[in-house]
Amino acid sequence: MSAGYTIGILLAYFGLLYLVSFLSTRKSDSSTFFIANRQAPWGLVSYGMIGVAISGITYISVPGQVVKTQFSYMQMVFGYVIGLLLVAFVFLPVFYKIKAISIYSFVDQRFGSKSHKTASIFFLIAQTATASFKLFLMAHVLQLVLFDQLGMPFWLTVLVTLLLIWLYTYRGGIKTVILTDTLQTTFLISALLLSIWSISNHLGVSVKELYKSMDTAGISQVFFWSWKDPNNFFKLLLTGILLTVMTNGLDQSVMQKHLTCKDLASSQKNIVTLSGILIFVNFLFLFLGGGLQLFSEHINLPIPELTDNLYPTVAIEHLGIAAGTFFLVGIAAAAYSSADSSLTGLTTSFCVDILHFNIEDGNRIRQRQWIHLGFSSLIFILIMVFNEVNNESVLYYFIRTSGFIYGPLLSLFLFGIYSKRKVSDHMVPIICIISPLLCVLIDQKSEAWFGGYEFGYDILLLNSLIAWLGLYLLSSKKNE
Image (cartoon, rainbow, N blue to C red; front, side, top):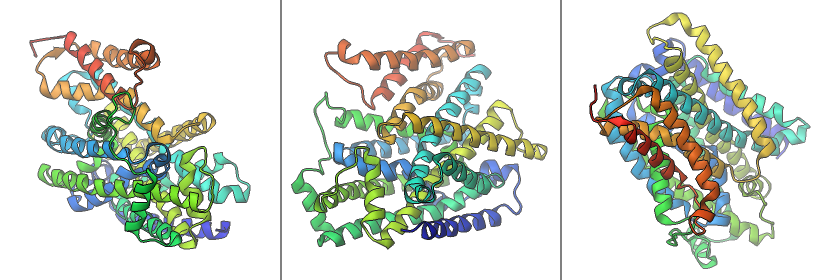
């Protein structure tokens, strides 16, 4: 795939995104940027959310992880479904009741201003980190297929990537994101299906026969029951539930989309529909991973040490021009559909939770745009840092980081919803800081302290429990 061809494909793709952005922002205001005037059709939101739920991390890392963990990721996907249902029927009613623009306003009402600021800052840290992880993947692939050929440095690849996102989101915000997500979901799923078909075609077998080959080769095991195994079913199921609640129900960038629906019932239909589709789509990614492994063995291609490189290498260099083209557009769609949401969510939370913007105030648009640019710059710096230290799967880093940071947020929301006990506002920040620090220590010492037991993704559960216990011990029965 030549550099000129790759540039042409990307320019055509982004030209389409900018056209959508232009058409959606002609009459935009602050309400459009933050909540799309609460007029988004639930079916459109649900379909577009597929691309956000998949993200560049799933698109690249999950197929590669099959080499090491087979189909065990499906156990976490089952947890994702349960988590989404909890978000739909536990969190959404609360947010619609208070007519939330930022979901962290609930923490302000329940605990106080210090707790509100703490929750917002935790989200800003976690979302900036995870957005950086996601965009790192996109920039890495662009570097591999295009900019290395042009002799351009990685930092310039990242700068171009972020600039493109900023340009089509800084005016229309969440309304633009919802519309562009529908396009990006279509491209992502098309790339996935074409890749599977291409592998099957190259191996001379049907899709059904391809799965039988995976089963025979012993690379398609879904369930793992050993308690000490990091891929244990119950660990991954619970992790999937907690991770989804944290990165959906407690994530402003995701919930902001659900809150654009006109009412609670519409938003719930959107999430229930999404949960069913995700089972099928995630299985396809694992199926693709198994196919990539068989294909690599068939052509004697060594599996890359960094398994995130497996899919890009095979798709671009071995599956033909059509599969390579759709792979490129698919990774762009996966990365951008998630990253544009993250950038918009970060801007919204900072404006509403930290600076206390009024949605009716149209005089702070310029300030909002500078904040949007500021978060883009911060993400650029973090990607550069991550590029220097990266030596494992990005998916692993993403989930582990989320576990340490989102744990206290989960406890704050659940404690606030289900308990009437009063917690002193000034103690909440202390609890939220101590809990992750304790988890880091326990995680490092777990083998020595617990007879060889190693924490995996279940560090999410431990972190949430410690924060909940802290809130309970420092609370009183009387809730004023």
